[in-house]
Image 1: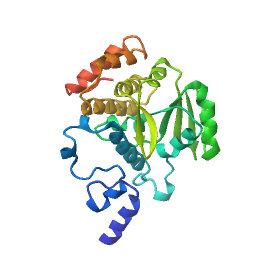
Image 2 (image 1 turned 45 degrees about the vertical axis):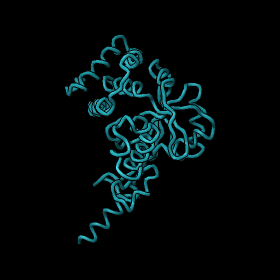
Image 3 (image 1 turned 120 degrees about the vertical axis):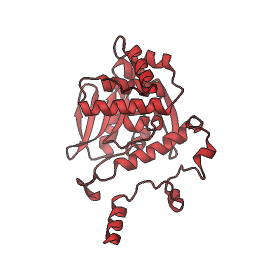
Image 4 (image 1 turned 30 degrees about the vertical axis):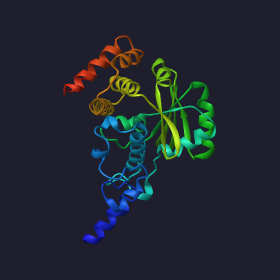
Length: 262
């Protein structure tokens, strides 16, 4: 009975990163040998590309695990950044990876997510969509600021159009990191905080989503001591008048251990 249970667990979690087991760490290509605490005195000393290479690998693998009690491994239909980035790179598009995958390196611990979020310029949206649909068997829904791609009624990818002032600015505030031999743009810390602030105060969002956004915001604040508050205020002010000061207050509240009121 125990052997059967162990075998089932191995099948369920096949492909998940195994961290801390010496014989299997080779499955995580960017894993540093030895103790991270000895290699890097603090989180800020870990190279940004390494932080994001680790987080992208982990968030993708976590996202593709079957939901316990709801899915079998063969039923999982989800995507990771590695499924989309090569397609957009192949047609020479500039884009920024946003959403949970795009901020994972800024979090205390990366997490799973249901889709991949890619920020593109409005003028590049059709080119990006055509490239994706030429390779992947997806259906597309067009909305004003986001083009959504799904399969079997499950949303897998969002092309976010950099139409609003906030996202036009985010498109300019990025780090270019290297992961799995490819370069990808991710938002700067302050831009990532601004996008999460916009999401968590947005009344269009479901309450449980806004709470998750607040948790991500707090996690980024907790994991990163060096936040340029002036830059954050400047970027967040593009959301609405007064948003910049509110976003800075949220950072101070998170640092003080206060619950963010959304």
